[in-house]
Structures are given as structure tokens and as C-alpha cells.
Length: 242
Ligand code: ATP
Image (tube, rainbow, N blue to C red; front, side, top):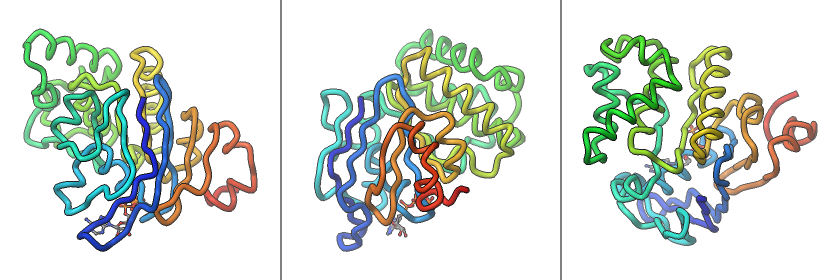
């Protein structure tokens, strides 16, 4: 569904951050990209979604395909229109708007009022807590609810592929499980494809179908999530787990 082929990314024309990265994101599946702080995970997501351009970054080699379409070099806005949405790290919701106003803002690429309404209904059908908090100013939502809202807002553009950057950050394990459970159901029932960036390898591998491990701008390991979960050497060496 989404194919990243051997990309290099350079910041400020000289700083080489991604050194030939290839990742396949399967349709109707969760693919996770793991790795330590600074490995290049967020840069990978920004290269895909096109926001890299506004941060003086550039894809200098390789290709990125969304379905049959090449998207490397396109503007973020155009990539969104083609069916890809990114949920940024740190759940950037519009704090002064209510939950529902945030969702409506996320639906701005929709042209018809009806599909915005349908989109909101779809989001509420998965995230019932958001329905309960629909008229609340989103700055007062809990961290977990804001993460749900950030994901819900991304769904409003009716994406085929969603990029999720560290949704577990700062949340209690039970909440992470709840959110990952909902994402899992969305993937299966709506045939979504998700690329999940995480530092929390244990939780990510519990929900993912396939995993990649990144180190210093390169993929050093990949395989079915089940295999990565069960291999103790891999767990210790690459993921810092016991
Ligand atoms: P984290 O989990 O901390 O976000 P990450 O794996 O996502 O880590 P990136 O944020 O992609 O890593 O950063 C990879 C490298 O690129 C780091 O060395 C970082 O300093 C560098 N980098 C990131 N953004 C820029 C930028 N705008 N200009 C220059 N260098 C950058």
C-alpha cells in the first residue's frame, strides 16, 4: 500500500539523516517502526507525508509510492488528498476548539457537509469517549483523550494510510492498550494501513503485524512482529527488553 524504497534524507543540504531506508506498509495491517531516540523515525514519517519540505529537509535519493502513485516531492497538502494522514508526536489538537470543532477542522479537505457528518459519526463509533466529550474544549481533555482526538482528526480526511508518531508517549499502559485496541479494530474493519512509530517496542509489537528496527538512519532488522517478539537476542540487543 505504501512503499518506501531506499530513501536518503538530508537536512540543510548537508546533514544526512536517513541513509537508504526501505519500508513496506501492507494494506489492512499495522507496521511498526522502532528505534531509539534520534534514530530517524520521525524524519521517515515527515519524508512520507511531505512536511519535511517545510523543515529544510529533502529526500535526495529513492522513491516513495502510495499505491500506484509516486508521492516523494509532493506537498503535504497533496499527499493528504491522495489518502495519507499523519498524526504528529505530542497530539497537537487545537486547544481552544471543542472536540467536535477539531474533527470538523480535520474534515476541511472534504467538500460536502454530509461526508463531514459521516466522518464524525465514524470517529465517535470507534472513540465513544470523544462523543461524550464532544462539546468540551479540547485543551481540557486528558492526555489519552487528546491522543484519541488527534487520531480521530486524521481520520476525517478519509485516509487509506495513517502515520502515527509515538501515540503512547506519556500515557499509562492501560490507556495505550485501549488506544491500540481501537486502532487495531479500525485497521481490520475499515481496511486502513498504519505505520506506527514507537519507542515502546513491547506495546507496539503486541499490536503490529510487521516490524522494522531503525538505528542511526538505517533499518537494521525487520520481520513479522511475532518473530521479533519471540527472539530474545533481538529483544535484548535492539529493543532494550529482557
Ligand atoms: P525521536 O523519537 O526523538 O523523535 P527519531 O528517531 O524520530 O527520534 P528524528 O527526530 O527523525 O529521530 O531525528 C533524527 C536525526 O535527525 C537526529 O539526529 C536529529 O537531530 C536530526 N534532525 C531532526 N530534525 C532536524 C532538522 N530539522 N534539522 C537538522 N537535523 C534534524
